[in-house]
Length: 452
Image 1 (cartoon, helix red, strand yellow):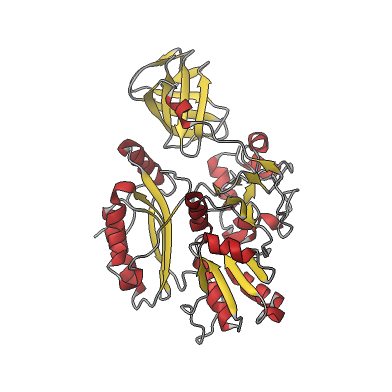
Image 2 (cartoon, one colour):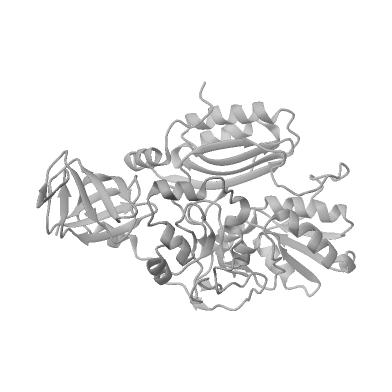
């Protein structure tokens, strides 16, 4: 009985591309009393694996929290695997605003002490005694009330790139830090204010709403389905967005745009930017905001030190990070001395710039190309890519396209290449080709020849 992944991320990406079927990125959660989380976890893994469902899920005695990628054709069957449990009957599935077939490349279902770590050890706290749910229109209306206090229960790296106007955005790195800070800050408003809260998909503010009711707050409200559901509703109903900027998400996209406003800055040069990245140095992996110009100049690194490290041999890089544990340090961009433009806790409701519209996908279709091979390896220090030619020969002067979910679409003309270890002008089916590249490639990348 399979209870674990058997394919690598690269192999899974390859299968997804070959299948050519639409996948849906979605999230859901439910608080409930689960007697045997381990058995519950195993049952879910078996059923979801049959449906080619991928993603990251946590289960605990207090419930379930999941972010998933599911083939569109299997979505109803997936829902049925949830609704066999009474506490997930008619459960809301928050479908992402922006879709990406590679949002998740493995299925992980883990048992945790809690689905949302809160740092609380109060047995009298009832997590199911929650505040009033508000839909998008109702949420907008209550924000107009002068007696309303709205709180963002996400972390600083999330609220920095997008938030509701006028919200309190705690400068924290974990949800558990938010609870005592907000509780102390609002002690004098338990009776006279509307305490309104939100988060990404609803799971954190749902627990927060129960906590603040437990603390004696009388008028507690929460955004139903979080920012994800809010974005869907304002689009469907033509409602004004009170949210400004991007919504941070916990898959490889790291964000989906809600409005065209850019409210944050590149942490290296200060240019308006709201694109998160992880430092290319695997021993650092710091999460930070980086514009395209700094990405190119710094080779996706957060500092000169990390840039030097990625040009070392892989063996030396592994030696450097042996015994070093990053943990939550990767999220602490607001505390990093390496970055000059950091504004955690100093957020503005003013747009710094307007995001460029994404290129029309139809422009990509106009490019005539033929698949000729795939990436086999990337030599970091030498900046050289290795490809296996599988379908058609390639020659010097050919225009090629290297494409992948992380690499994107990179076009170039072959000026020089080595075939099976020797410089040559032509490579045939079965040959191994190496060439210098001005960008990094990944194992799942495809090699195309562009036909004029």
